[in-house]
Length: 304
Image 1 (cartoon, one colour):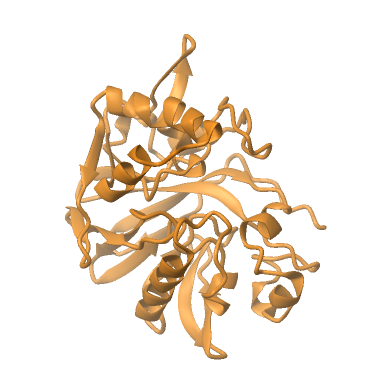
Image 2: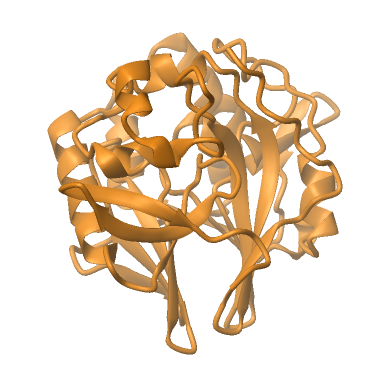
């Protein structure tokens, strides 16, 4: 099992989409055991058949490279952060997420997005590794990290979890990372129709249900160029080759596969940049048809 490279604490990788610069804000590389747990269908044999996954997205032994990061950019004058990772100092049942101490906020500031200057936080869904930096601890209390921002998620998403019989670990996550934002009056619930909805000019929320019932992807458009941020509709590039491979934590596996296939089919052969929320560096690429399905043609950071 090969250990993935460490995150460069000074790096702020970015891609250009029209007039918009999209920054990847790194949090942590997840341990190799994450792949077999999260995507059990992506066995070493399956991975080995897709040579294009190595060396960036899988190691020589067939273990998947997966990490946690956010995307930050400014569109129409609005400073946007998409998903907020795992967070520091959080009590988590998953050992890889428990009581982290990362330089995430420093990297966010280095990219030009200090927390108090974020205007809009988009949450693709309400899982622990996408909402963690919603809050940080001040004098023993969890308070919103992005105090001047509106936090946005799908109404379907929040209402689903409101009626869900949560296990204690998930209740803890809501207590420390979701409810404080609601109590501060910062969370906006948005209806996301089948055709999507514009959050601000040039930024559209797209329904991609299945991983969770209200899951959304994010489409960014500027000067005729387009990028799509996956959220967990696609966890890893191996799912381009095998869209049928789902995550063990998908709430509605068949619906998740349908959303994934629909999204990939809409992107294949286009110039749209796909930005994977859990894709290891180089993280971004274009979807091309390959052997009856798809593969990712990587676009390195700062290279267009």
